[in-house]
Length: 124
Image (cartoon, rainbow, N blue to C red; front, side, top):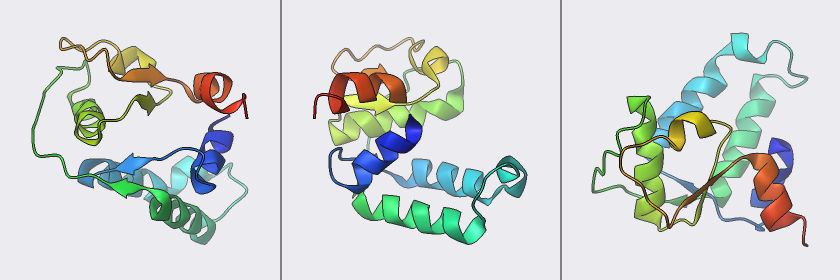
């Protein structure tokens, strides 16, 4: 399902946003060869997909740290990026941590890729 959501971003059905902290996180994950041992694509193909995805993203600078106090401190930047971008939805498989912040933002939905597909993309 995640591939379908990425594909929707690549064809402008969804508008993804990125900021400095999220970019650093993606670059780190994409560079860890041990995470991709079972993948059918090599490093060059992964980089090409990431670059294509980034070309569709709106770059957002985060100027204010909300500090929602998520269980994993390193996830706070995702909420802050969504708020700075005035995003309506965060797409993640990490619901457990992102929904457990002390500071709540009801204007931002936190959905899994499957939920995004069912609620936003399947109706096309």
